[in-house]
Length: 205
Image (cartoon, rainbow, N blue to C red; front, side, top):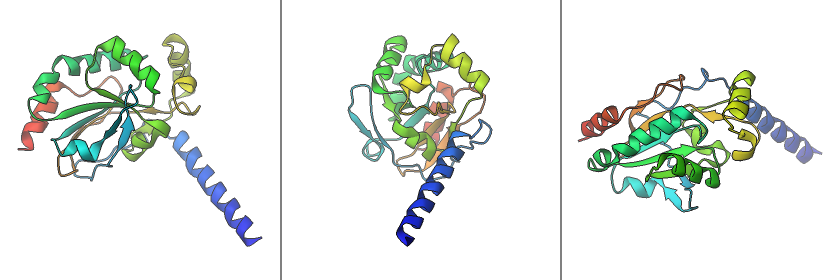
């Protein structure tokens, strides 16, 4: 009986946590701060090839960009801008990856739409976005626009039907595994610029 009670309590506790994550509003997410230790993430890309942050940091700093999906015009424009100046970032010794809750087949759509050559990563179960505290649940009115007008179909393209999204933040992680710089704004229209990223990389040296 005691074992059953413990199991029930554990289930209720996990349910409460899950509900809390799913109901978090855009202004509740704070994002990891500069100076925090970066979660050592790993994820597969559009080709189902694994990316490991620990291994990548051995080669140089890593720029981690969170984006919403191939259906987001602002995301498309932002990633295209990063791609257009990718050589400037690469010449500074940094690697760029972009993270989305979309499944690999939809990452391929993003590659086709934007022509990006850096790796797009599948955030299965929102593990990466949760670790960086950038996950939120859009308002119902916003979800209607995303799923109908923009064709997001979040329940189909994500790992579950919670329809959560990441705030489109950018993080620069130094080779010491510490967050050296970030661009974080609940306003999805405000994104990191290539110049800001490059200046942040230069300050690492």
